[in-house]
Image (tube, rainbow over all chains, first blue to last red; front, side, top):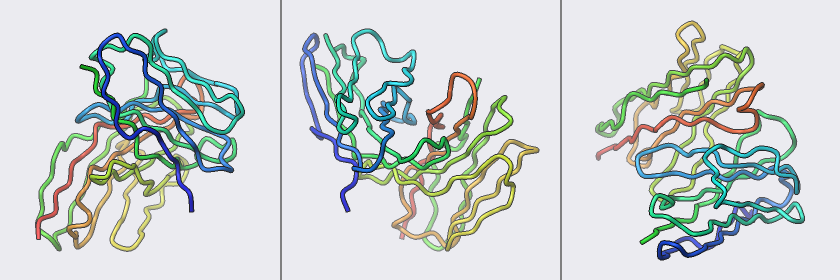
Length: 115
Length: 117
């Protein structure tokens, strides 16, 4: 059973650098979500895709953030000109069908540290 | 606005004790969904339960039970006879059906449960 896979698990970067994370959802899942979690907080929604279409973006997602899901399978989240405030765990989740009450399957996340 | 409040930041119990994790939510949606997720030290959130707003029946799954009360906007989670493996951070979450929050979960800040042997 292949779950949601995220790469890398950890990323350390210097302020001002660009970083890109990858998420591979469960293969039959057509919805993919990105969340961000900081220490002591719950995950915060960033954006989600249905197939290749990006349907919603949070106001948390500044212009420095961009997400893609070009073929409706894997997704990438890029952060340009990273800032120390971007340090967080970035979580990807997927679910099947279009129903809003479907449970999410989460990956283990990418821990970003911006020095 | 939608909001989930988990007032208990940390709870510590001794194995075999029962423990209840509180969750209070706010929403203007008439149809909504409530969830509990578990986040063990490995970091991967694991789905525990989903409850629809029009179904107020309480649910029991093994040592886990959930008490949903619309009158008090609460969705509390009880672990009976806790075990060390229950140690984790537990998140309550809300998803509305209409408006700007469609398609995403609103999480509480979580309750860290430590079960000591």
